[in-house]
Length: 328
Figure (spheres, rainbow, N blue to C red):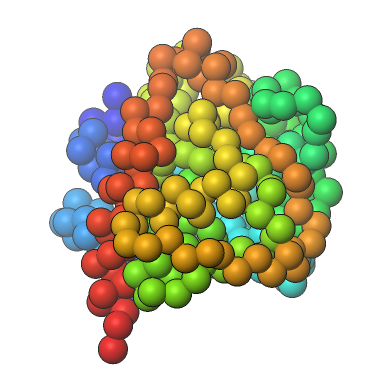
């Protein structure tokens, strides 16, 4: 379905972006990778440069974004660009809102302006998050669970998600929304996150550091399974098998406490497992968050293929080499 299609991936040099771009290249797409900067450490540089065209685009600049889409004859967009760190969102709420909310609105506004023209987009898949749901007593989250993010990052994802639904309903645009749990795997160099940070401490012979009290429960999803979900949803959207504005939860079916995931990362890293340092300084965190992806399975047949032990083993190999490279 993507064979010969010109696809724009915003936020292409982040964690998920390179995995998605790789799958699009294999599917025969002509991939335009958009980002503000292309860090040398990003896995995006592992992709054959003849098969991925990089372009510097700020999604907060609608003129720049529109020019990239129209001049390159883009036919489909995967919108991943976002400020993705919860802690940074708390420190810089206005910047987070500008990127996550207005960045998403700009992508959708360009789609609206092109709708009905010869350059109309065949689809836009918007990356939302499980954080968009906010705190709920009834778990797992279903797609029908209200979006009520309260803290800066969560609220920005709720807003972007609702705006995507609004554009789909009001302008009859082919838009789908993807809400993933916590992604993990090779390529994530945000050391403040629990999985990369724990691997780094393990390979440095240090005690892992936990910012919370260790009891927070989160949903964990292997990054390649997430990339495959985006591809499946994108194909279905182009084929008219997805409703305008339809949302899909994507879960690995693995929800663990912070202490539990730290222990499993330590097991994957091998060696003696040091007792973690529990700082208990994290604030404004939801106690339990996890998703049901049954809707996606029922509708489009997606299921996670990589369980947590296998995913962490694959990640461990990558982080072991990466941390070795970081050693002076």
